Length: 321
Image (cartoon, rainbow, N blue to C red):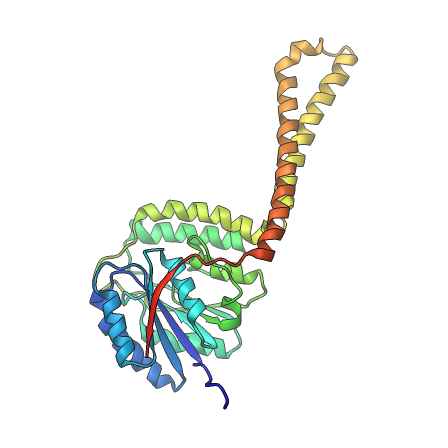
């Protein structure tokens, strides 16, 4: 007996206290998915909600065979919730979206059109944003420009969750921290093709947003980390070694120049230049430390790629029919 084929499409939706929007989201999503004439599953991930979110998705899973309800042990954050959904998705194409009705299910066919054209990742672009200018749009604009510069991926909107992925691509990307925003940049490392499509940007109709201006600063730190991951994770010695060589050679040049000038009687004894001499020795020591750090990071990188097999979440239970 042949095993039953999995669905073509998996829709992954992380949830945190979304009881007010869940019913409408499920109804609208099912209406769109049925019109596509493709097999599908909807994976809801409850990320430690304190309201009745998990009970609602469990009831949906009992009534709708296409629904899978996952409950995480606590609130891990959106990246971990998405990772849990991706790991449990069985579709050839995986689409992630928010559960607060800010992403319109009617846009879903637009993503599939680009996947059918051969792209590996289709990223949504909130081209005409309706968010607050100073609290959301301006910080988002600055962060997106920095991300495009650092990653080399010329897309306008890294922040939206609304994206489509080929299964074989997303399964080869390890998520951690808040890195769900940077999947296109991480995917570019493995040669994935990325395209961007405009999507509707809708004000959250129910509930309250969990976003605030304070999240902009962690994003800036993430950008620094992303640059390291994108450019130097597999070769950290290039980064630390270059810094180390620069510091060491600068210190050595200062010491050598002082010694030559002192020996040639151009300047007085070296003890009269004690502060500068000590600074040059300091630079050489720092340079050596950076080189050693680079070698250590290089070895750790090799170990990381060989033995990394950890999850950033723990599933409490899964319900499906």
